[in-house]
Amino acid sequence: MENLHDGIEILIYRFLTGELAPDEQVRLNEWLLDPKHKELFERICNKERLLESTLRYDQYNREAAWRHFESKWLYRRRSMLFWWVRVASFVLPLCLAVYFWMREERKEVVFVEDEKVEITPAVSGARMLLSSGEIVYLESDTNDMIFFDGGRLVREDSGVMAYATDSLDDTELKYNQVFTPRGCEYKIRLSDGTVVWLNAESSLRFPRMFVGKERKVYAEGELYFEVSFDESKPFIVETKDNLSVKVLGTEFNLRSYDGEFTATTLIRGKVRVENMENQIVLSPGQQAIRVNGCDEIQVKEVDVNHVVAWHRGYFFFENTCLEEIMAEIGRWYDVQVFFENTAVRNKRFSIEMRRHACFEDVLALIERTGVVRMRIQQDSVFVK
View: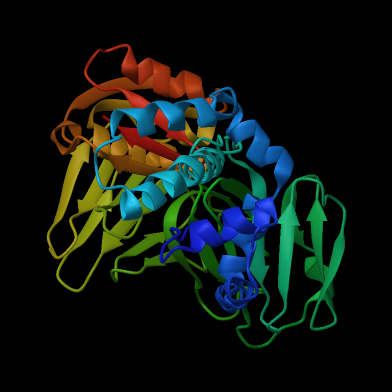
């Protein structure tokens, strides 16, 4: 807000008291050509607000105060001083009125509370990019809707997206891709009967119909596969970092988020994990890990129930650093996480709780350790 200067406050005061001379009116009009000045002038001239802001000063007897001041300085030269003090006695209330008005305006801007944003667990939802280029939005309430993909049916059936395979006669690979954004999860059934669960912020690129001697799909994020058995057509999952998982008929979990290690965990059956340098066959209960920027594949024994807890509707973190925990929680509840205290990023916690729990309860569980404090502001969490 622009301050009053160059005697404008005197002109405004004279305008309010009806004492403005013609030449002063011209000067005031020139100042009012600026829209910001005009807005300020109109608000100052709002008599109701002006009287409210200057009420305490109206109770002061200006004339009596002036006579007292004049008597004290009887023997001083008063020609110029008289005029300035006289002006000040009238202008001071006006300036203070402007000051209080501006302070009220700032309060209205600074102290208005942000509208509270409701933070909820992930819901069933995704978007699908069809081979035709059309985008279809899949939500939990779109069951039994029918979409057309190049003249062939794509059907949403009881919460699981599936194809009416008898209506497809593809002789070449035509790919669709399904995406789950932050705060969403989804389950689909491919044309061969394979069922895939997609965790939040994941994607799967797959053909409408599997053609040829293999069934190849491309995955990012975290996905759980129940592969339909077909010995003549091995099922192959490829990741962004050129890792390939080859299966015949099995259940396994694949985690491959950007910036994180890639982990393949076998629940049942047999898979072969390979890249340009290595080839490893996993047995149930084993996990193959490939760290970003490294071609080596490490294998270790794991508790598969912990790894696929998300698939069963739970968070499970065992001796996990807080930065990884908050990244997972942020992805699921669709919130941004900021560390105000970077020292706590590597603090480790063990947590198990339902993924559909109230967001505040999840944070409260971590806070109970006494190590960190959390502050929620709209759709962001600040870790102290």
